[in-house]
Length: 251
Image 1 (cartoon, rainbow, N blue to C red):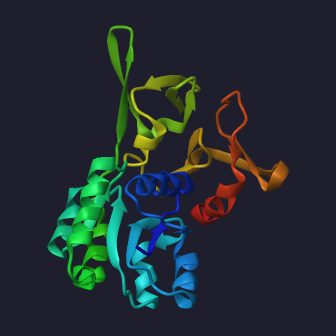
Image 2: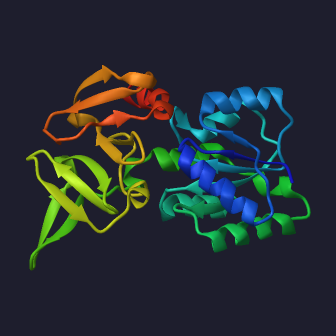
C-alpha cells in the first residue's frame, strides 16, 4: 500500500509512522507543510492513502487541494473538536483524533481496506469544512488551567501563562508573575488545548506564548534563543528543525 503522512509536527509524524509499521503499513514519505506537499504532488504519483493533519505550519492542509486535484483516500489526523468531526462524518471522511490511539488507527485502516473503491471515500466539499473551521464560534480552546496547591485549587488563566515546559516528568506553567505551577497534563495533550495562533512548541520541552517573547537571538547550530518578558531561569531554545516553522508562525 502506497501511503504518505502530511503532518507539521515531526515527532507526531514519526510516532504515526511507527504505529503504521505495527499495522503492517510502510509510510516512507512524510511531508510537513502546504508548500512542501504541493511541490511533492506535482512531481510524484499520488498515493493510495494520505494521513493528513489539518493545521499545518503554513496554513490549513485543504489549501493543498486548491492547487492539486486529489486522487487519494484520506484519513484525517486532527486535534479539532466534535463540530469539525460532524462535518467529516457528513462527507464520509475517516478521522483520528489526536493523540492518536493505536486501536482507533487500526479500525480506520481496516475501514479503508474494506472499501472496494477508495476514491469514492473522498467525494467531499473542502470549502464547507474550511468555513466550519474558520468560524471562531465553532472552535474553543482552553481558557484556564487548574492546579492543586495544598488543599486548594488554583485557576490559572491562559493569558497569564508565558510558557509551558516539561521537567522531571512533570509539566509546568510559568506565569507572568514568575510563578511555576505543576499541571496534571502532558505537553502532547496540550496540543489539543492551546490556540496555535498564540502558543507554539519550539522543542520537546517548551510551548511558548507569542505575547511573552521579548527578544529573539541567533544561537549556535542554526538555532534561536528566546528571551521572555519574565525571568524563567533557564535557556529557551528553538530547535533547529523547528526554526523554519517558528518563523512562519511569527509572520
